[in-house]
Length: 204
Image (cartoon, rainbow, N blue to C red; front, side):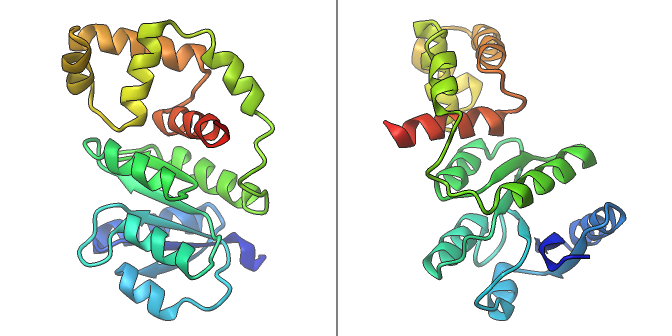
């Protein structure tokens, strides 16, 4: 197995570390488990292989601070951030800090494995080149004004209730608009939607 298929799991919860380690090993990844971001950074060499899966909420250095420190040290290793359902704002922040993806817990095993494979296969592609940005822009142009407002709220990491309050509509109406946005943008997940919005934002 190539060293590039290595996955570093950084999580302070021992049960999560063990279950992820087992899952990834059965998917034929080489796995290294780290109990904290501090422990990981203390062992990190100048060239970190593979990718990192980390929880966004950890004592000490959290997932977002880990991202910042890695980038500050010049590491471009892809980082996938795991978040709780209420942590969408943190997840969006992580994407803006350069995370390859975020996954909301609880997640299907296949979603994580697919995210890791995607991160590994795209890691050599410079972030600035997004061949799909024109396509994303075209999809954005199909959104109604209200749908764009809902998308802006989602990309800001706001929950449906807050978006509803800000726009003076019901949370149920926000859910309908959100479903329409996902459909029109051909987004497979919230992280996919956020990623597309950030790609276009970066070009603007």
